[in-house]
Length: 346
Image 1: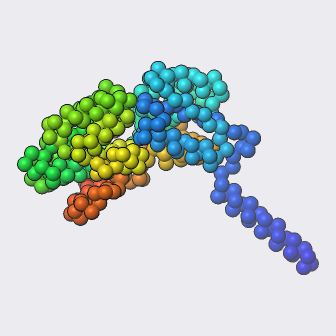
Image 2 (image 1 turned 90 degrees about the vertical axis):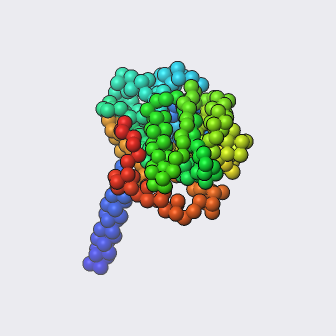
Image 3 (image 1 turned 180 degrees about the vertical axis):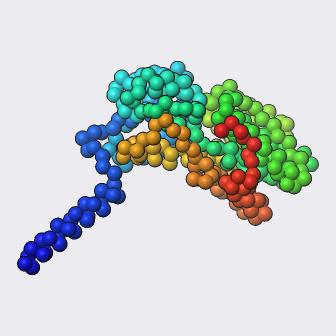
């Protein structure tokens, strides 16, 4: 009887372990190795910003999960369709693209291939096909406080004629989302402190031309700009180098460029970040565990940590607590809906 009771106890214990394990970890098909393809964006995977950060999340997922992963870098917008067709011909299950440049090709391919899943990063449409997930970053929530900080710093450097500026990528909605909210952040500073910091800015013709970025930044500096916000991929990197060379200040984009481009670190007040690597990793993690949500739009914002400001690094001790508190209050106001960034194209 004692031996039977012991065996029964063991069986019950094993059932509890199995039951608990099933609850903790979704059931996956061990015989199926999902194939994931990543297509690069303009500027390439080594742009020290947007594309490189996406690749970082992709490589981490490829290392951590039993996935068959392939990437396809591009040098022109036409290459995006070539990459999609290459992956379709090679039996890829999930194809990841990014930005406005890839939008039409991705949507067309998703509609034409309902059995294949797609993700497009940093772009959203009203009603995605059921096999397409859109990832949108509410970057205006981070760009607005960056505008406030830039206005403060420009006013600190030149109290008589303070000027801040931006070097942007081509004028598409995802780029205007930065510029509109940045300029509104500058104006918010002006109203709060009764100042008149001027704002200037240029939209570039490319995300991949560092020389153009340097020329546009030089033009801003010649118009007395003390701080330049660069959000234009490799083109923006050229603006950062020019600001550093001229002894001015800058704000980076997409990643903490204090680390991604150490040479310009001494000029950076902060960077306006998107957590691209975290988002891509989570998408691939969910895909492996059969939790892909096609036909949806997911958002990265201040509330979920999808966007934010990088640390102030070399300038942390030079930015007064009153301004740091004001910036924290601004971010809280944005999250609670009491402060508007001015960006309405949601």
